[in-house]
Image (cartoon, rainbow, N blue to C red):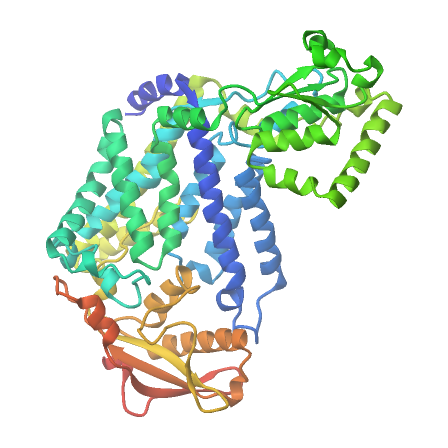
Length: 633
């Protein structure tokens, strides 16, 4: 098997294609990671403090989040990408493995993002739409790019294997789990979650939810899609249909459920399924057919060359043509009319209408020609700012002429990115790469089989854990292996939105409080309809709806969750906790395993019942339930 797989991988490794799609995937994944870090910063006291605001977590948590955000921005920009992706992968391991994100605040997509982060670390995702190629060129602007500058292409495997690993294996595992869920077998898998208040988004999609045939078609299509994705991925003719269905699938999740982070996280890898011809066509739409501006510079000056390299790198529209004065001055009559002594003291620009600009006006015209930075050019035109910018430009230009800018203007040689160089040494020859990759893929397949067979098949068939001694020993060994694959590779059972979440989930809870005037107000977590409101979607929603309030409520866990919610939102609202009365409310909801009309509106319209009070006493919540036993609901 190893030899056969290696024989298949070797020609694919040698087939080079454009790196644009891979870089778009890097940018999208980086944006998802960055927004999740901002989310964690906002909820850091709820997620990481032992008691929100009252018993805070270590300041190292805040510092780590700031550093992590910096690494995410570096990934988005493609700057020091190997270092940034390595640090980002380690951050996911540390935060998911050693903080409450491991269990209580599992965002539903942490393991997937661990896998995405590992892919970003392993593939050359910085060869397009990145700052790294520019940094490489700037090492010696007079001589152009170095001989070891990374190419603008990547192996086709950088597209297919990440999609197969991130999406294909996930879909296959999730599809197997869905076969054991009654409402999925009834075709209602896409219908039930958006009718349950804790899971639904603010978007009222009743027009679709109340159409039984449409919901059944969507439900069965999703199951078929998840089983068909991995085998059909390898055939080019099926990739666009898979792209369209998958994007529609996850866009529907974003619109109908309050776990938008999961939806966006799953959409990012679909950039790798976009046909290469589409990227070329998009590039053709963006780029100008002819340059709108011709800029002339001193090609013997390293500072000028460095400036041109930077401007041309960000000129994605190719709207500006850069010409060296020494080579092209005689070809343009407009330049011949300028005093030759002045030509090298400024940067000149010639527009298509043959108008000549110099100095700061040249930079303003460059920004306008590039289009997207045009607002900066408009600001520079303002009288006060123009005067200041012109003075700064003049000082730099005159200083360059006075010191006769030469090789001393060159940036100090850094020797390249040591992490990237180390990775290049590890890759070895194409045959060695194919051999190592084949071994790694076999390992991933075995680890995925361990997870899927144990929890997707055996656990479901046995109705729980093994009872025989031999079976328990095998299960313990399988769990130990799964723990490692779950932590390091993101391989985990994808039993999301199954019957386990909904069977018996017929009551939901909310918290209110009374202000100084005795007016009852809702804590900004669950609203009067019963929906979990923004910004509590995603990780906090999973905590409240899957940990604190469940089909079988456990009082100790409920009290801990109520304490965290009251302390966090009470702190946000500036409440005096010891002197504020909180009320615990409950209302019934229906979670049938088959279709019912108008269920979304009926669940939202159910009345609330006051079932208890909450009082803050010595950094803990005292829950009083005079007439109800939550554990018997």
